[in-house]
Length: 277
Ligand SMILES: Cc1cc2nc3c(=O)[nH]c(=O)nc-3n(C[C@H](O)[C@H](O)[C@H](O)COP(=O)(O)O)c2cc1C
Image (cartoon, rainbow, N blue to C red; front, top):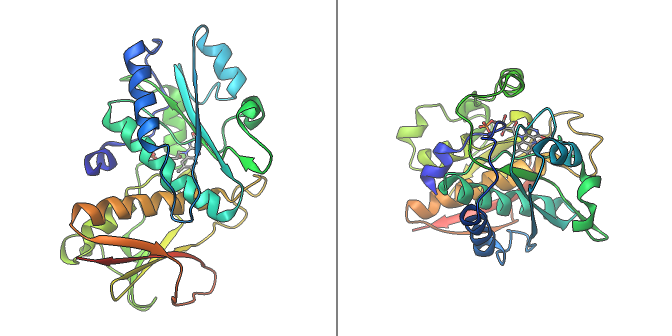
């Protein structure tokens, strides 16, 4: 999984080939493996897939990705309860599917905004929502012009510095980028830094305490305000998934729960990870 975190990149341009039976089987296997898992707040995702059987452009127009995502031969999505906690859980769980698909050599791209929820409504029930979907297919070597324009506009290759996101005990002690190598949790924080986020806003903030990692959301003002759910809560779930993978890799045991934490003006406290060896 660690390699998949380093390798993953949003893929918006796909080879124009239908998925063969083997690839579809692989995708279903990854979903099957993840299906029963619960998020840190106890929700689970009901997954669905849509595979293109005929015209790529017709399907893209139906799902509403036409112009942004080129030649995707399939989509994976899911529904979950539409609460703040449900959305965090979706981020945490769906990122594990994204990383599984990445490990299988397939391209993906988190889509929270640029698709038509309405076109997929047969998959949802009352009180549930599709927070995001991903196209899935083989990445085309050459990115489309639209894809290059998107990446440029949102500075997709850049990440915030450690001192803008990660703090030791309180805000007076931001970590420096060299903490990546010097701090005992540096590698884990780097995995969080590498995470995808909506419009690459990276709204996760972390305060380190004794054996605790507190997660906060610093909301981008007015961001995705017209959406029927808190888009940036997905980013927190993604950060939690990356942190847990890092902790596991380094031999720590972890539990996630809400508890005592420093309160920071302008940040929403979400959850803490308690870790021990
Ligand atoms: C929750 C979420 C929603 C996203 N929604 C969209 C979207 O609607 N359209 C899009 O083109 N990219 C979307 N992205 C992809 C981000 O723009 C991308 O992850 C970010 O720019 C970093 O680039 P990278 O994924 O290549 O590392 C989304 C990512 C996340 C995590």
